[in-house]
Amino acid sequence: MDSPSPPSKRRRKNECGDDTSSSPVVVFAHGAGAPSSSDWMIKWKDMLGKALDAVEVVTFDYPYIAGGKRKAPPKAEKLVEFHTDVVKRAVAKFPGHPLILAGKSMGSRVSCMVACKEDIAASAVLCLGYPLKGSKDGLCPLDKLEAVRKKMKSLSELHLIDGGDHSFKIGKKHLQTMGTTQDEMEGLAVQAIAAFISKSLGER
Image (cartoon, rainbow, N blue to C red; front, side, top):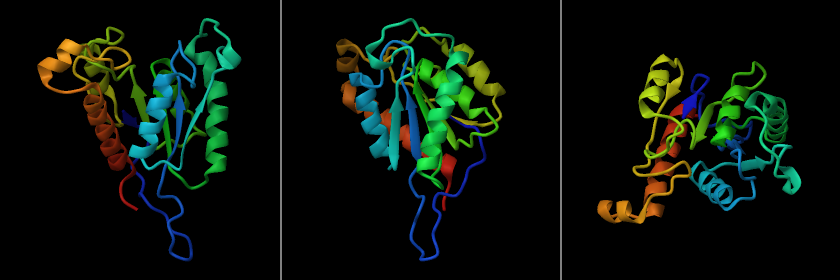
């Protein structure tokens, strides 16, 4: 989780004093192997929407996987233009609302690339699964991740799902040892995300 721009105030009021942009618009990108209609994406779209009080969580499919296609994903760089167009349409639909870019695995990598574009004013980026992930996810060793985070100038926070794999799934024995459940562990992650976004957006 990182905030590529300085924290902004949380609320904006119109001439009548009513809040017009208290809720963020979230653009949520899927991972390399499953579309936005996957059970995982649907579940996390719902959780993010509720936790962030989002005006909308926008999901979409990259062209290589849209319409039931099952092609190998291209390099992340080749998806930036399409992703950027989706973001711009979402911003145009909800002017004045803070923009949050979110993604699962590959989608989070592309989200970071989009956030770096000069014409995209993202308030924060949420990376789920990669590079911020469960403690048993081999796609990003924690020591290397920490080294990168030390170089970052933007506000960033890391939340680990103890025992979680690349999709945060925790083994039954590990859950029994900790005396918790999958839903409880994911709930803690969502709470951490909400706290980070609140800190990134600040108070309006």
